[in-house]
Amino acid sequence: MTFLKSIETCFNKYANFNGRASRSEYWWFYLFTILVWIVGFVINPAVELIFILGLLLPNIAVAARRLHDIDKSGWLQLIAIIPLIGTIVMIIWCATEGTKKKNKYGAPIKLKRS
Image (cartoon, rainbow, N blue to C red):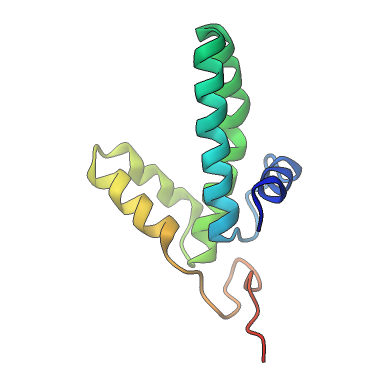
C-alpha cells in the first residue's frame, strides 16, 4: 500500500474498528500523523491540538485493525499506557507480519500468489 492510499483508506474507515489493516497501511498512516503533528506545531499550538484531536479516532481504529491482523484484540493497544514496556510491545506487535489464514477478524490482507 502506498502513502496516499493508506491515508485515503484510513480516512474512509475513520471509525471502523472491524477488519484487518496491513503493516504498510498502519505505518504510512502513522508517518502521516507525525508529519501533520510537526506541521501543526510549526503553525501554532492551537492548530496542532486540532490536528491531533482530528486524527485521534482514525489512529485508534487503524491500530485496532492492525492488531486484528495478527489475531489480537484491538483492546490490547491499551498496553501502550504502561510506560516504555507497553510502547515497545505495541511497536513489536504492529511490526509483526499478519496471519496468512482467515481469523476471527476476517480474511488475510495479502494473499499468497502462486
